[in-house]
Image (tube, rainbow, N blue to C red):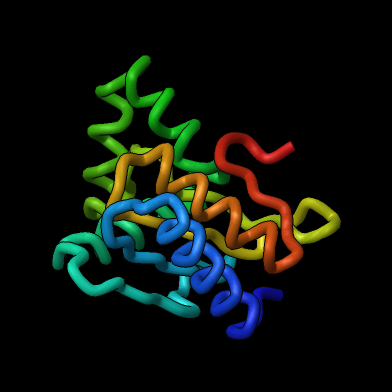
Length: 144
């Protein structure tokens, strides 16, 4: 189970990682395995649509069962399918790196992190740092 204290660790670490890299202001959303928001934080200066993007990255990861890096790669190969996904999910799936599944020690998905604010690869790196600091495994693509 993903606890609030875990989500706070993930957020604090992700934002600390972003500041150490001098990234643009970030928004971090942490969802539980059921897609419910556990915690969220928006840095000063982050755009107002960034929450929707971060939430969409995390929610899309949970909805598809893999991180948004994989979703991004699939979008490039099959844009029609991604258009359909966007429609059936009411726009909640965002095919850009930065949505990362959170796995427990047994490999069970217990939640997801979505980060938006900088380029996707940098958003993803911050999500992974936060997940690992909280003692979990990160799955930015297909879970192993």
